[in-house]
Length: 307
Image 1 (cartoon, helix red, strand yellow):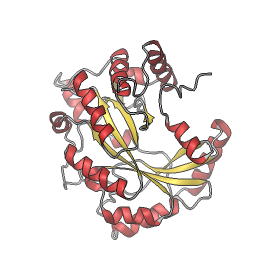
Image 2 (image 1 turned 180 degrees about the horizontal axis):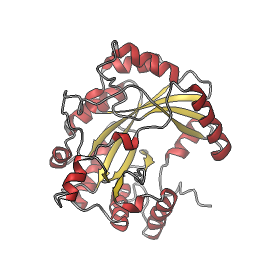
Image 3 (image 1 turned 135 degrees about the horizontal axis):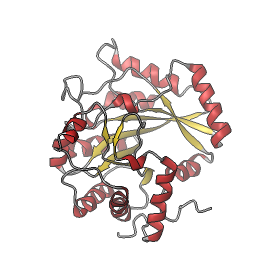
C-alpha cells in the first residue's frame, strides 16, 4: 500500500522519524477565548468562526476520559505515544475571568504533559497572542513544543474580509519569535477566499518557504452555521465554496510550490455534519483524502516539484 511519502512530507512520517513511534494528537481543553472575540481586537471573531462546532470533546479535567481515549487510540489505530493538543479558541489566551493568566497557563500545560505517554505539547494560537512570557512558560516545561498559528492568507484584502485582526507582518514577527525558542511553528491557511488567484496561491507558497515555519495545515473555506459568513452566504454576498476538483487543483498548485522540508499536517478541513452548510464534499474524511492523493498521482503533483 502506497504511503505517499514520495509525494508529501506528511506529519505522521515526521513524528515517526522524530520519535521512533506512532504518535497521535490528544485533544485537551482550557478556559480560553480570543482577542478577536473579547473586544481587544474585535468582538465578532473571524467571519467563518464557530468554535463550538470545532472545539475538542475531551476535557483535561476528566482524567478518566483521557485515559480511555488513549486506550481507544492505542487499540484501534496503533498509537504508541501522544502529543497534548490545545485547539480551542486561542490556546495561549485565557479568558479574562482567569485571575492569574500566566500561572493558569503554566499549571494547565504542566498537567497536560505530565502523563508518561505524552511526548510533547501543541497549542493553537494567533500572532497577537504570542509573547516572550508565554514562550518562557512553554520552554520551562522541558518538552517538545509546537505553536500553531493562523495566517490564512498573505492577501491583505482577504485578511480584512475575513476579519482576522492581524497583518501578514505580525505573523512573520511572531513566527520569528517562536523560532528563536527552538519550537516548531505550524501555519494555518485557507484556500478559496474571494480574491484568490493561482498566482496568489504561489505567492502564499513563496511566503511560507521564506518564513520560519516548520509545518502547514491547509483548509478549504467552509460555511458553518451561526457565523457571519453564513449570513453573507444566505444573502448571496459571499463567494461560492470550491467544488472538490477545483480545491484539489488549487491544493496541487500550493503543494508543488512548497519546499519539501515543510511538514504537511492537514490537506483539508472537516466539520460536524450538523454544523456544515458548504461544501458538503468534505464530510467523508477518508474518501476525500483518497481522492486528493488520486488527483496528485494522476497529475504528477509532488511537494516542491515546481521549485
